[in-house]
Length: 100
Image (tube, rainbow, N blue to C red; front, side):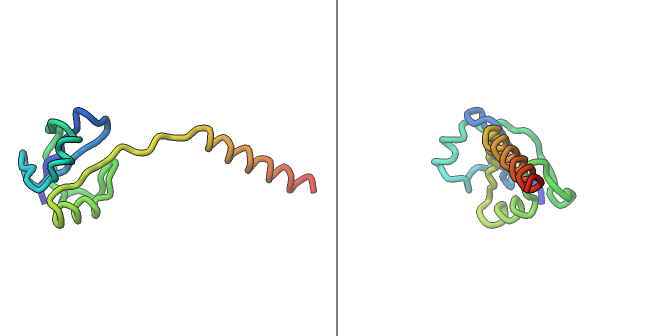
């Protein structure tokens, strides 16, 4: 299964996978407006891939077959404060348990 991957000029780390190069007929107009003018990144054969860097290969194939496109959004931003709070809580729990 061949597909073309385009990056958005409007949305950082946002990629659009389509079945045929320069064929966006299956992509909703609203999505294309938000995505902006697509810039071709690469053409790949999904049949020869075991995994993709930032997307689930099976989900990409499924979406391409079912709706003709797959939209890859950027990962959510790391919340370092929440991570720190979790580490502190775990540390306090471990310290409290050893002091009992």
